[in-house]
Length: 343
Image 1 (cartoon, helix red, strand yellow):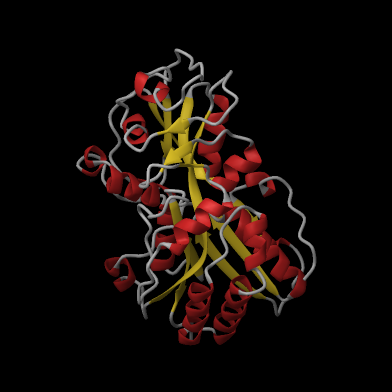
Image 2 (cartoon, one colour):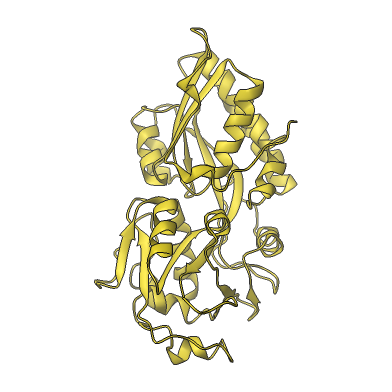
């Protein structure tokens, strides 16, 4: 397979439009929308597949998981991407049903902009929920200082940057916070959107790239984003304390350790809200491609089947290159079997 050149975050544009040129009148056009979390990987996958299959044109708009699910329900797209698996109620709204395919996994990081601090901050598991609840308001708070001996923390107000749109990243992040914090569970709770505390120090930005940009532009800011956005944007990432009491950076080893602790479910709606193990990074999620079970045009069904097959096989090594987590072998195998249900 040809070498894929990475260009930062592929400009972090909101839309991948591979259907803008060529293809001919007999080209098969696939339209999708949804999660921005896997967008850099989708961009690479779809471009690579298009290069080898010029008769298939793929248009994917990174609008957020909630918007992608709505588009699938309203039949304005052929497929959707979501970091939150669809609920039974949402599935029931799609004529003919839905196939939910785990396609990759990734890490959600707590990224921050703290001038003058070079080494990664360590955030305890009873501290970072309080930061996102707006209860710890300054960076030199004793609770933060306790985990960072020797680090000079500035007397700077904390600005929390959260997602403005309906987001699977928010779903996975809030599900984790609900698992480790009663105050969060009894407050904002879990959802693609949640009711954030009313504070002028909590600001909203759209999609992962919007949150990333806002953090970079705001001294004292902290937010939650997909690992690759922080990595390529050179945004500092915190070491988070996991359930075993170990502080773990959001690298590949910690992500794989978290996946290995997750039990498989029959429907592959696999959640890892608080992974076990000393090496596990605590905020890891799968992300899904959502397909209708039946398509009026068999050519569209066939093209989607082969595209997804590529992503689950040849495309998996590209996930690691871009900072995502390749699927465990048993998850990839069961995902491939789901393609037999597509008609």
